[in-house]
Amino acid sequence: MREDFLKLDFRTKIFMSLILSYTLILGNIQQNHPVVAAFYSLLPYVFLFWCKEWKTAIKGLIFVIIAYIAQKEYLFVDSGYMGAIGLFITVVFLRLLPGLMMARYALYSSSMSEITLSLKKIRFPDELVIPIIVMARFFYTVKEDYHQVKDAMYLHGLTIRKLFFYPVKFFEYRIVPLLMILTKTADDVSISAMTKGLKIGEKRSNLIESKFEILDYFCFLLMCILIGFYLRGKYA
Image (tube, rainbow, N blue to C red; front, side, top):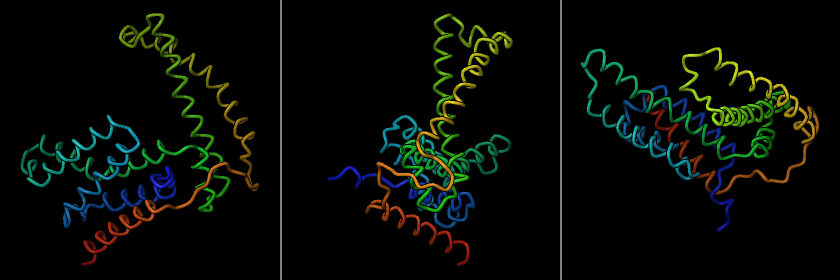
């Protein structure tokens, strides 16, 4: 079996993120079709499990199941202040997080080349594609640079525990070195974008292909079914 057969296109991932966010946040599916809502709330964590984000996927599955049971059994009804907090947390796990987790899966499982090609295929303007790609590379580099600064300070015994009550020293030993590194990182990322052919109004060759496979069509079908449940609950 080809590996591409089991790989979702980035356009499919973005479509699923948007549909899950829009339909689940509004809440009428949870009221009219709670089992359907629970299934689609679990779906992003299944994909995270698929791309080997074990820790996040297992935690998400457990929390969604607990939130679904709590909502179904009305555990937070008439429970006062703490009940309101529990109900809010339940709503977050069942309505807000699925779309965010699907977006996380989309970014985690896609290379920058795939994202660039997919955005261009949906006719996304170059004026937006290039800043998105540059910012994505920049923030990823910021994360790596901060870990390097953190490790270097750890070797010198400058841990967060020791610097917690000394915010000035924390700023000096953690933030200042990071800012010094980022001034060079910003220039390097911009030069990297230019060398990779990211220019406004010019075509760019790609070593990868972006096309829909059977799994993409199946996921589109799942999202169409979700839209059907949403419309049925809203207008029926």
